[in-house]
Amino acid sequence: MKVHFAALLLLTLVLSSSLMDTTMALASYCEEKCGVRCSKAGVKDRCLKYCGICCEECKCVPSGTYGNKHECPCYRDKKNSKGKPKCP
Image (cartoon, rainbow, N blue to C red; front, side, top):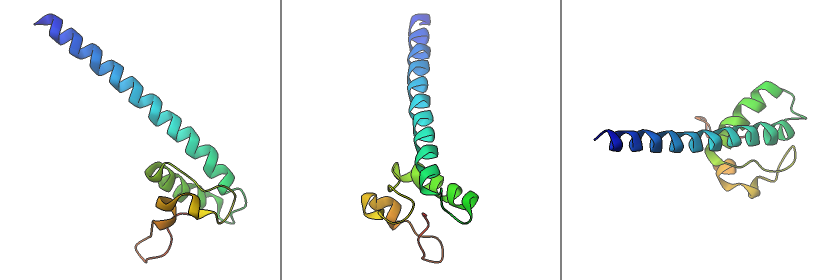
């Protein structure tokens, strides 16, 4: 019984560490891509906030500082509560 518990605990630790690496990698990816995307934005902090939200949900950010949303349909199709594009 103790062996099963130890094996289960070890398996849980391995799986959680691999998920954490993936999450951290996605966060740094989004930070980098959104930094480029929002580099010329007039309200940079708002741009970075919404770009980060969209990037985490869609796992992609269009290239460049404007346009190119065809590269990431999920990012392109997100709308706010007023029906306007959510992602910068």
